[in-house]
Length: 427
Image (cartoon, rainbow, N blue to C red; front, side, top):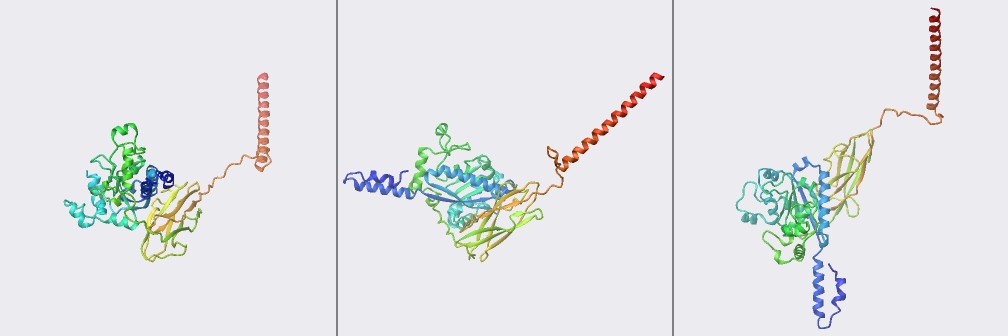
């Protein structure tokens, strides 16, 4: 897209008759560009049962890879997706419903549409509710708490009823089977494109190129000319996309204002090199203000303690549940976490830090080294080539003794042979 600076020379090389019209065009470009840059904050919610199959650290890696892929796809529109938090949901009801043959849309109606409506509006729209479909503001409350724009709900089960592993929920967010992220790199990007009021790309277009919205694939990329036009219209608040069950502010990053950063997190480790005489260390997370001084908030402040295995193995060298969401209660500004480690015959390291705080910036990252256990078996020393070491001298003396014994044995055998010959002759 051209910038205002690029277009100025062309705009003003007009006659005086058309200069007013040119100014209008230029201002139109400036206005278009002003709306073209959006940061969309995503809140990831994961069912507890997902973590029975994927560790939280591994899940975070998958999520970051998915977000990176989405950002590559939408970069030409100046749309950037960020992670505000990864939260463990309170129950597995969505997957329980999916395993009973219900669809993503059916089991997650209250979770997503309670974001769009208040309780009175919700009940007026959804009049035929079963016991699991009542108004449920939990996701809306989390979005507001973290200042997030969209919800990404990760389930353990897929949707067998419509043979789908994910679905875009209008422009409110998306539901996705967590394990499918392992094999579908473009999964999140594809669903976020659906959030922009677009269906699948036509089969004719997909035969020419596997665009992002083509059904199937896994590494799909790009948009058709028509799809690019739709995205640009949404960026510019085109009234044609003020659709039923959509809200113009929910398309991109305009649902809520970003949270003000009022503090920062700091990590310190009691013993960053854990010797074999110890099987644990302590991590201290401190809440500071923006000047680096101790800070006490009047509200709760949540954050995620995260780990990054470098050469260590989660579940072997340290507890794979160490990555977790923690909360500073109002008036609290320190958290102490015991970190148990296991020593093996190899020295290993891993990183630890704190991020995804609501209203606070990320911490520094510290490295913890777990020392290797020492071996009690001595390593044989072959000695030097010139025999100058003690080991070499000992080896040389032993060789002379062996040669001497062999000589004696040879003489004795010779004497015995001569004796036998003499006996035969005299016999």
